[in-house]
Image (cartoon, one colour):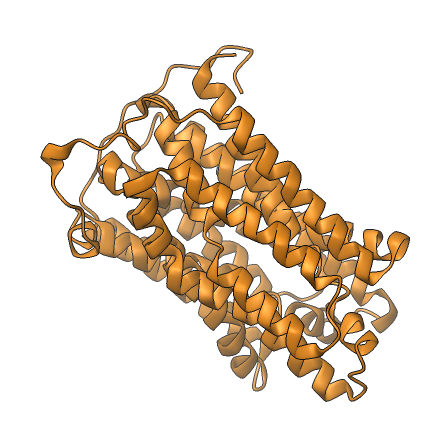
Length: 405
């Protein structure tokens, strides 16, 4: 295995483990608050919402900062810093005695997070220029599958070892990720780490001035906003379509799993399609296809149609997202990738944070209105990319050998 492939395997594994660990605590966190003495269900819901929300909120604010530091001092040390802090925070969660302790530790976790953007940067750094779409797509696939598996795994771990020990197991996940990146990832000689002094000092303003970058920020925000709009309303919509209440959890679980798997496939497809078509065309086509999938939801006569619309929508979002990140990478010099991917991550997390609030508000009047808004949003993305995005070129890859990573 060549060095770049070994590095890519390390980054992909770290992304999967890190993102899975990030969501391991989600299923049992409300029960943990009850175990800590919070009896009122409203208070349990409040503490759970605040604790789950504070981490991505702070991550969104600080991702560009950590990315900028990574441009100056190296990506590997920044990822190691983040993973080491997660080991400490997760282990400390096993010993808390008050609800506010959990909230405070989740806030600390958000302060020291940011490895998601950095692993994308590292993937772009290590891959040959003609393999960058493949590297970005592979890491995004890991980042998509991790949160899909994490909650299920977390629930099983909590059932086996108890709530407190589940946090120690989660800390162990991050120890494995830290060991992998420490021993497997070699950044010596990489252009993105060894900066060219002639390029001058990179600022956030200069990153935002890169061709198409502001447009791609909007696209990534929109894709994440639409992708996350389904979560708060899907179980209610399944009931509205006539599914018995007893079958709603399993049906919702199937649809969420199908969407996650289709998104992962979409990331992989994009890496191959980008060899033959431009990022602009791929984003335009996939956004339009995603709109077709959401329209199936909006006008669904029954639950069965959701099983058709979900994989179309999930794959389209995956393809468009990888195409957007690859297009952004193509206009960034190596010395600005940390800051650039940090800004893109901020846009993504902002969409994640705002979407549930908007979809919840719309669903209070009509759940179908949520899916209509999603369809309009995807068609708008297709239109603005088609009309406003300046075509970018990046090397086309040959068909990979059979032993390709």
